[in-house]
Image 1: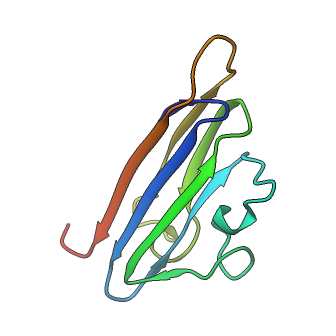
Image 2: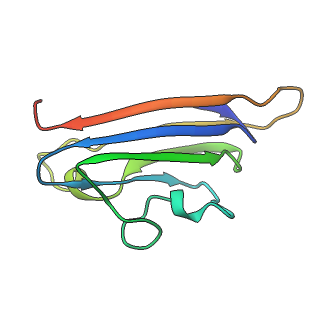
Image 3: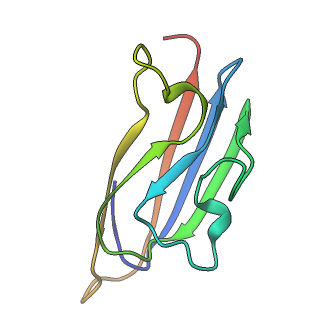
Length: 109
């Protein structure tokens, strides 16, 4: 995922797993005044139990960051880690925009 500093990120997490909870933690992102979207289960938000959660925040920390699942399924050697890159470019002459991403998890793999 690539956005510019100040862009609004809207990410829908759909948890279709029958037995696991999920959140998305935005590693390295400073969530000033938007801590609820940090994705740390039981600390900044409740884990998503089978359903949808919308992350909606501004990209405030320029740099090369990453996001990852922070609860449930990603733990353990036999389960692939849900993760991805997040590149936030410094805004100089670029205009703000909205970035949208959708992640869906289910037991049918």
